Length: 491
Image (tube, rainbow, N blue to C red; front, side, top):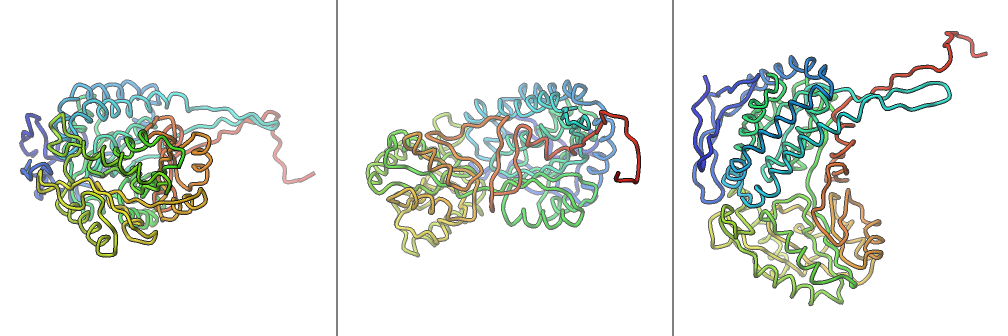
């Protein structure tokens, strides 16, 4: 029997899993608490091994019929799925703001429209993938992208709706069935997403939702031998465990694991523009994997740049993410806030200087002040490790060779930013080892382009054809151009 729905800021939410087209309750639950003010939001069903088995069984059972529809047959379902998200735009904005501390204004104007596009763009792009022809003198090769099977999608708490749809879109469009594992610290918009899938009429088993802790629900899911693919965004430590577990069943994994990206300010940069963009690195309380948190600034302009950045930071409004004036909201969890504070405290104890911030913000218990640290060495922990909070570091350089060495001097390689004369910036960017890098800009993304990192920032690429290369089995159907004569002879 399903548990009663509960109300969060006027939005009706189911606390249950979504398995085989219906809501399924659990005896075990976990508390969902708002990071804004620690208000309890409700008790969420916590999945057991039995729930996971039921979800994967249903997804496996639904796969053949969903795959057989082909891209044209799946398109109407996915268009209705996106439309259902759009009809609940305000509910998604309210819910994720309360549940994850994301700015309500950003949800309404950026995330929800992008979530809809994540579904429709991939559904439409799937129509172009089949029967690509490669002509050779001997044969015609008909290259197909066939759906792989049951896909496990595991998303983090910093952008639950965006990252779920970013993975679900191409997985479903490819003809796979999906089991989504919601983030434990921010599960509510995933539950609302299941309502949208149900309203859109997705056949039972095509989309499943599991909730619960990673070491229980997540562990049961990734160890299931029936999975065809695992797509994960999260920490390096968890990714290593997932990859090791999946290897036992030879299940391919796509892993997006965050970064420690460089924000390079060359001597010929537009300092006003660079400082304005650097201020964006505090967005979502610094809980953004692709943020350029390591400021690498040419020694000739460091004082002027720092003054301009300070002016940007002093104007930032820290507060309730439901307030349209707020620019920086809370840290997701007290445990994460303590982690951020620990990084800063250890850095200061090791000789770092706090330029501004460095402590909790007085607005509330889970708020941390925008922070800048300098007087750092390349091997310092806070330079090398991802903090995932509103903390930037600043180092200086005097030449291109030095800044490239600093930029490449961590185990991460997700993104980056470079401000300077365009030709100069491109020349430096080409030498930085990273998955992508913005020139005189930040955050420009297109679904047709590849996204992903190198080194400890992950394995694989998402977006465009790259998503389909992962979620599909690529098959070559070979048709000879001349009558084929079987013979053991080599003459």
